[in-house]
Length: 207
Image 1 (cartoon, one colour):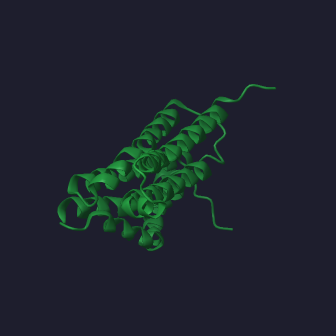
Image 2 (tube, rainbow, N blue to C red):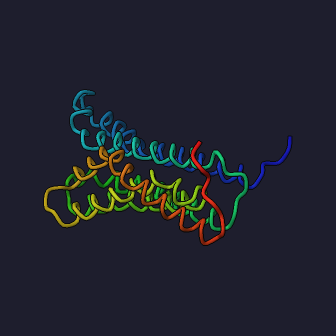
């Protein structure tokens, strides 16, 4: 069996870390079941008493899954690795590994201000890393989706930090990602054209 190429090793390592992070999300619920069995708590009450943890688990599962899908699609056309690519991939993995921590805090502290800022800030940091990777791999024109998501998360983070009571509802702004993407794409396209002009290249004409 031939050895894995450096890029293949990076992708395999990334998939493994994401899988572990997602698994860690459910472990507090597994522990809660064990404690409830010892305390002879009825099964239905276990679900009712741990609704915040269940909701935070489902939310973070969806967030990590979405981020992983974006990262995986981003690397489908990459043929060689580099030190910056490795650095930003590891930085992105750090945000994924950290996410179970604020997720568990949501289950315990609910709508606490610091917990909400910590949670949304972690997702924002992850999106920033993906945006940098998108620029490195696809250039400005190919990074519009990641940049649009990051821009929305910046607004969500500011609202969470400054507006009382907003907390996790700010993440609902992500439903406007397609609209923001339509506005960001032309701007990044012009950036790509200017970069090509500086390098003496001509943009590829539309087919």
